Length: 428
Image (cartoon, rainbow, N blue to C red; front, top):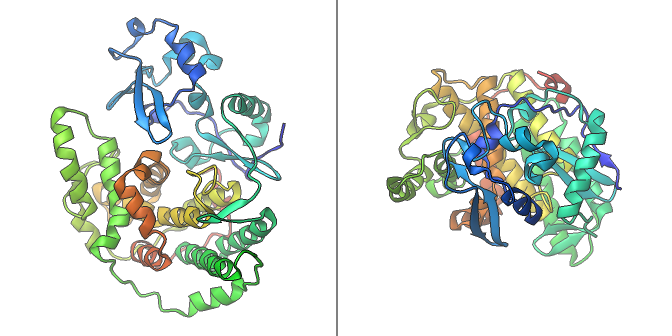
């Protein structure tokens, strides 16, 4: 079995909050479906349901899920946030997706990177038992995963469209990204812009080499160019802001109660939110917030705690390679990094909305945690990228100039703290 590799100081212990069971649809393997359909469950369900399974037509074919109630969540979730399957049949009987969450196994030549999804309060808090002390359980889980899902190391890294690079070339790129994200005397948004500029400079060089890939870029030169620029805020045009605001429509749709009226009203609601019009109500909001209020917010000056949490998020994504390739819709490296950088303005926008809902203008640590929970879910939800809006956003994200404008517009501000690493956040 390949060696499992864990990020430094990564922790997780389930706190039984039930958030994953309420928010996520649970896909089933053929073995999961056969096992669960052989048991009479309906009479034991807390929230009465006429069915146990939903089948949906998706790009990869028909996919079977556990039935999901828009308010109560998974059909097997009980009022005490525990799973009926787990209670009645034990852990090993559960569906593979349930046992996996929040872990992801990402194959690499040097081993299997163990990543965590940040759509989980326990992962964001980084609390619980260290992953390296859960090696036995995670190894068994990885074995179960390999029995149902093919886990092969790609021979090369898909870099841009159909252009691939060898793993040693990727290692050079990755080392520079790590260097950029750890520059402690730069605000985080500038570090992300440095990563963005570097990866697009690599793209330009790669396309110019016509089939060969030799990285002769000077990261310090790119950094100097970035620092010399006057990072003035330029308000993105309406069509450009849709790249970020369309995620609000997706989140509102996901958390809305389904009904006949809902199916008629929701498309208009999603359109208005994408255009920056109307009010937003999301989980944890004390009251709806008008999107127009975002334009009156002062520049964000993140506290040391907020900046450390955001830095921790992006560093973990880079460490585990959880932003491109098999880990992320098979996106090429350039597109995957674009999406990762987009998570920053989206998180800041959501944090501002949470703050306004709670009666303060400047986002606090809890606002950022709640925003990160939703933004990680929205950015890496497969169904948002399968629609027309998702494909349009993916096209627009190919422009580094647009991404820079969004990052500066939503996220710039004078940082009151510049963390030098994730240790400032770990375990809070």
